[in-house]
Image (cartoon, rainbow, N blue to C red; front, side):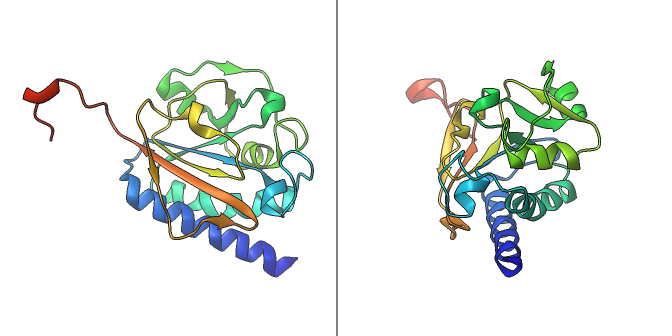
Length: 182
């Protein structure tokens, strides 16, 4: 199992690094991650939560984001209506109202619980508009992205056994045929 967790950490790190390069995020941007630890280990989403798998994914992603001063938003599972865990400073910067909940492995999910434990000043919020994100295991992060989400295909299609979908966002194109875009 140990080598498996190391592989999961390496895959998560590689996926995050590749998406960060493709998305061109700036310091202070938000990177959302939805992660089914059940799916990572080959189970069915919501049925086999694993603290170890969630921690392995977090250890792959979070240090990269911190190095680049990009905020991590960890999506909770459906039992918490897909609320998000983030640093309180991020919630304050973007004007997101905190809600009162602390995620647990079976009510919020192991990944959100691991992120809560890792953050200096964790906060939970209901809605965000992230700049890019990883969906690990079909967790449906789309509701947490800015309006124009652009799919990004990575060299990896899985983390562990979980399918991987990624997106970056961009501003809307407006103005029609006479408009110029930079």
